[in-house]
Amino acid sequence: MHTNYFQPSFKLKDKRREGAKVIKRYHAPATPYARALAHPKLSRAVKKRLRELYRTLDPVALLAEIRDAQTELGTRVDARAGKTVTPSIPSPAPDAAAFAKGLGKDVHPGEQRAIHRRLRKPYKKRVRMPSILDPHVEDIERWLATAPRLTALVILSRLAERCPSQFGPPQHTTVQRLLKALRSKTAGQIAAMESVGQTTSTATVHATIEASSPSADVPSAAQIAATSARGGVALGNIVR
Image 1: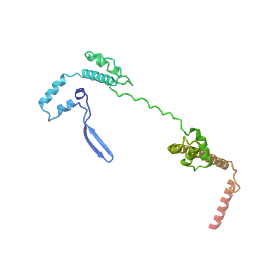
Image 2: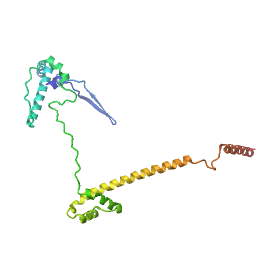
Image 3: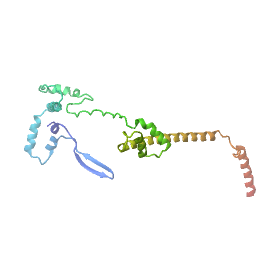
Image 4: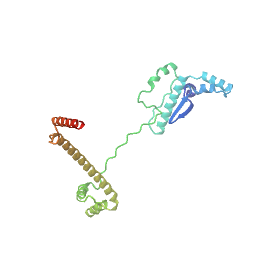
């Protein structure tokens, strides 16, 4: 009732496309009740009943009833979830002036109303569990430094020779994950070292060029002027 009689809304009037742009035009905002009265196919008897019902409605009282119903709904949801619910005291008959005065203070910024969906708890980060390979990481890194092309099967066979009760085919995937992580770490270190070396060599070259003195092959300003003068004289002789 509150929405149909007291809340205006927009309705699409027409829509057209101009290339990639879509242009929409809307009717003036109106309530569903006003649109029903303006509809030509609605009978006079129906319009008369709508007007009579409209005269009996109070938007403030309707809004108060909606708030009470929402609070009751939230209380029932909490009770169904097994939470402790304090019995709600039935609200007295709504006073229009008092209710309208407190509308701006009912909901504060950030406050969750009774019917709002409950906020999800923050996801707990997973704690890394100790791995069966932790005591052998240093040995595996040493093997890879000696032979970088070692496969997970070879590493697993070496570990099985050491601890046959702990390592076997089921641990193949675990060794693969560790091998992938170690190679990614090594690749990142190599890339960082190469970038630092390239930056250092470039800076050294620029410093060498800037610090170098002018060579004897580069003519001075006086030599350029003398050459230009001799060229002018020679050009004059040719013209003559």
